[in-house]
Image (cartoon, rainbow, N blue to C red):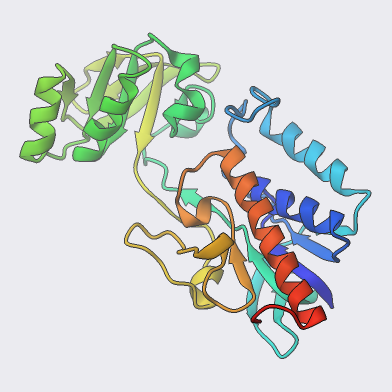
Length: 300
């Protein structure tokens, strides 16, 4: 029995573990190692850590947890449910955890475009977030890839970083609103399907179209959707918004008694620094709930 089980060993889960460990809570972090930005060479937008490699950031974070009462289980949660004590979590290794409170920091999984050779450039010159990687490609030739309207919406955002943006809608048409926006902003839209990518050493040089023509570019950003990485939020009774994000109420509470969510799973602003902040916020709420139960204070 531990005070808190945290499922997810990314910035949200580790940040929560730090706050809870310093509050002298017993904590287990279940880390499957499937972080969303593991393909990226650098992580941006995190004050004092801008440009750090994601793997190094996680290593430093885990090292900071060593002196607190935090155990990291390098495993994957296969099942979780409410129990008399709080929550029971089964791991793929066969281990069973029991905790008074549960924090889901399971994140989301990007739906990567099904383009040949995509993985060769992903995380180096192909990205999904302009805020995370747009600066590195400022004033360069950028392709915004998505289906139909999604390509135009992304391309319009990317114009903040470069005037040399082409939207590739991958054989899907635009509605009248997005066609008008593209025309108004003098945005070139290519509707021909993308057939492949060319470049070397992780650096993209050309987007090859079905006809054999190609678009010279230095980077590609994509908007092809994302899904919850884990089925646990749904199985445990979380509510979801229209975009598929877990609905969090006051201080990251899911509305399920004793269960909280932090990080990209709620589909709010998906920055590493925001995920870490949500983890800290959830940790404070969890600790206060535990305090209320132990002291008979509050309304719990």
